Length: 270
Image (cartoon, rainbow, N blue to C red; front, side, top):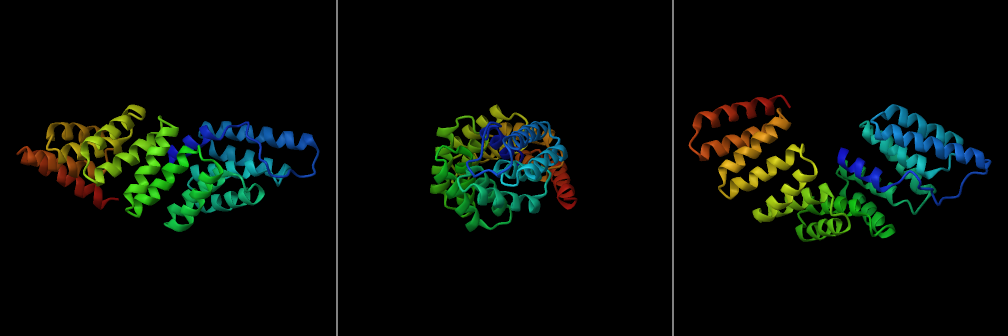
């Protein structure tokens, strides 16, 4: 979720002005509300979520019809883990501005978090209809198709996202998962390697690339990747389990057993 928030903030510039009708307040009030949103975005960028929420709330108080303020406050609530409070903000932003593709996208993400995949798909489709260049919305829709095991549609969405944004870390990551699921390990490794280039501290990319190497029987490279995943995420039982399996394939039973014990311990403490 963190990566999606950062990508959307980059896409949705501070200079955005909602196309929804503004309140009858004087222009200075709207200017003040816009300035408060800009201040809130800066707080959000700095990880100061409470201050960001306060700024967006003040903007809404000045102009209750300012769709952008609701959209960004919803993003701030998500970054705080307050998903239930985020949902009404995105819905209100959409009510005020039916062309708000970002609000549709984020509300779709929240529906997906609740495993309400049909509503999520409706919102992602609308976000894409409103903005066909919205790379992250294709990634999000592709994830829904992945969950439905509709891999052809998922792959098409990830490919589209990467054509629109060749720096989409999430696009490469989720496309890599598709290739992994269909046992196309060479392409999976290529995509996870690109993820690592873009985000060198993303433990899951090392773990999944390691698994791809494992199924190619390249156990040394698999162990190297699982070891890096453990360094980045020391309490993830999957990496220990996977490395243990790779050690076992190399006949290193003691090392394998030690990793399997740790995997069981961390799994029990989840």
